[in-house]
Amino acid sequence: MSSNLSIPFCTSEGRVTNWDHSLVDDPDQRRAIGIGICYLCWGVVALSLNSFVFSVISRPPLIQYSCYKLMSINTFLDIVNNFNGLILAGFFSIFEINHCNPNQTIFAHGIGMYAYVVWTLYTAASEVLALNRLLEFTSPRLGHILFEGKRCWLWIVYILLYSVTLTVIATDAFYFYDPWQGMYFNLRIHHEINYVHIVNNLSKFGLIIFCYTVMIILLYHLTKNMKNMSAVSKIQVKASVQAFVIGLLAAGVNIGYLAITYTPSLGWLDAYRGVIGQILWQMLHFGTGIIYLVMNQAVKTKFLAVVRWRSQKAQKVMVFTKVSSNAATVP
Image (cartoon, rainbow, N blue to C red; front, top):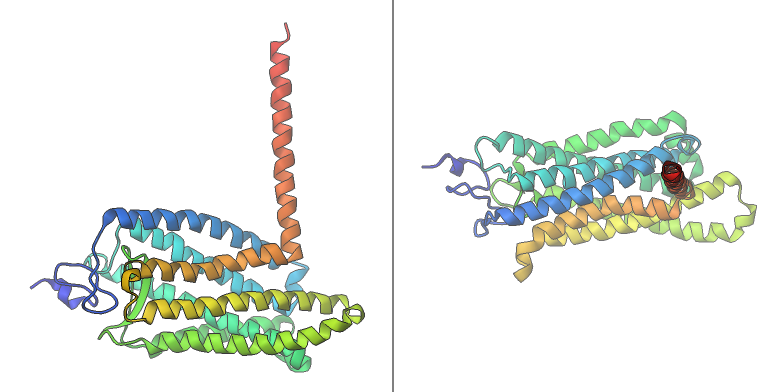
């Protein structure tokens, strides 16, 4: 009997099974390569954008504010999630790396677990940011105690503990990437629902909706007296609005991802649900960079400065080339 039977979510022929025992992957190499190339191309764009955003918001003068410290943590995790979900996943699909190959089982499972851990880190970090924004307008004194100065960085300990706890609780979870479906899975070995994953996503959804709903109501009343606000307050307000929009994106993606992942059957969409789920996940992290680029004045100004600099440099090169060409034709 084949050793593949002892590997979770694998058939005796070495094919990947995912949603339930009746769904077995058709290892279509062209499909996997197509998925991989698309992921890699998107990954290059996403990593470039989010790395640029991180380089702006993680430096003075913005980094002095607690909200930007937390936004920097979240953006860093956006970068890592984009790398995991697009670059790593792209290579896994192109080379058809999967856990049902006995020579790749440990590596593929380890990468799957690592991707899940990074996602739970992001979940905790986004919840901390939502709490920070809520306290900014409901209890500034408590917010000062919990987040002011270097105390803000101590929340990294909570973020790490949260991720470790969720990973340890799911003792029978098995993590893997399906190169033909184009999606990471974290399923329980006995093909039962992974409630830890569901609770993680739903708790994030609930907390973010609550925090940002209360915050935006208070913010609406506060902005009526915008003329009397200090420069610091205006910075906090703008950062809060950006966090609110990101929170809305996260809430929508969470619900969509859970629906795609745990709905028993989607009919003709079953063949594409892996790619759809992966796209939803990555749209959250890529979309965050777009939101900062559009709404954050510092990021927008820096981006336009880079574009203008490159444009001017290109024009100078063209002029120099033209002058050199003309000089070469003089008898």
